Image (tube, rainbow over all chains, first blue to last red; front, side):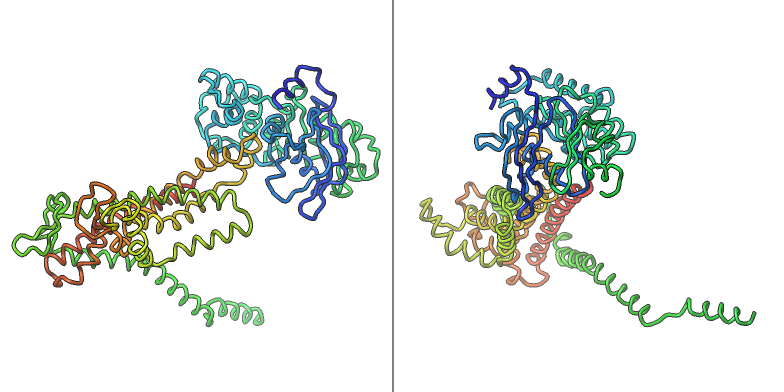
Length: 267
Length: 310
């Protein structure tokens, strides 16, 4: 996997970061996804919208296999991340999580210092190599710089991360993914716990990260999908209804269901 | 005009009418209050009683030096009785210390397995089993020490007597482990699941999640569990009376017999004349034990409360 990932970064980036084919998913007896075929472009922000229970979070949580924590999830079909099916038997879960970072609905910094939060993933993936203090300082600074948090917290890196404001916590949760250099970032309603000001700040940050990472963002907020994503996928009852450029989906949707949803007739 | 007058009058009358429900409510409130404070009153009462019984000794024969620093407990010596509890403290401390060495790995391991790995029926079954283990009477543990551990130790280590620190320490460790497991598991359960999810999403393996995230987050609760287990060990009487060998002795190795503070009271109180210096000295040991266990439990409680707040 190590060799494979370097190979991928050496060659030209594939056009699609995530490709799924015939993806079906069951929670016990309940089928949550039906034949999902999606091609998600590399380096773009793609949003997933749809009413509650449509399977958008379920899909997102399959892309880093965090769904498997539940224990009663069954999957059929493939999800290729950078041309490798992550459900192949030879795939190491740890390497999937390294390539595919995730931001959760409720900010979930670990109950340690800001600095240790940033270094958590870095330490896990440095394979027993101890990095020097100055290297670590560099990692922390660059991650916090990227999420525009450095100036605010640089004097209190040893403060407990859970004492930060929710907006800062969510930025920290994004920042701690960056040191391990993932290629895909999954975001599960990353702003729903934040106030409008925090939402704006985090959206701006996501927009800044565009190009460098492939970002897949689930949102309940249609206005957010419209202003903060380049492509948009509309899902309903476990199926993909429509996948278009965001501007087209919201102006000239192909399907009647999409039109009804974005006009607020249901959902 | 007169109509509105009567209306307001009846309304005013109704406001201070006390029906049966009102009285029942007041009575129940009073009963609950009494039940609530009775526990505190009883504890204070016990402490006062023990202190009064031991007080004569504290005033007359008590010498701090002798009591805490002499290793000779010879209260029935006719000419010069000596009341030194150093050897008894050493006995209790050595047995409790060994018990903790036995109990901590067992209970922590069991708590991690039940809390983090076992699911569904296995988990429920193990939890019930742990509760059942905690309910085994201490005399049964003492019996196991006497009749199973004793010959086993003699056989394995080739020592003349198997009733010693090792025997009592293992027995006491096994006794304290269930309650420690139960509290440690509560502490692990109090760690929010989103921490585990966050760590797993960052690529931590199951072991790394537990070791780097769950255990540090639960460390106060785990410390509380250990302290409560220690309190249990300090106060335990019957099992240590049966398994230690009951010889006043500062142990040089785990194969030496010792005698615990609690066991001394249990064994000797019935044979002393009420009010005699010996009787009062035993009550002074009681005061000492009471204070130690109270402090241990208080500390444990404060630590466990600390995590709930933070």
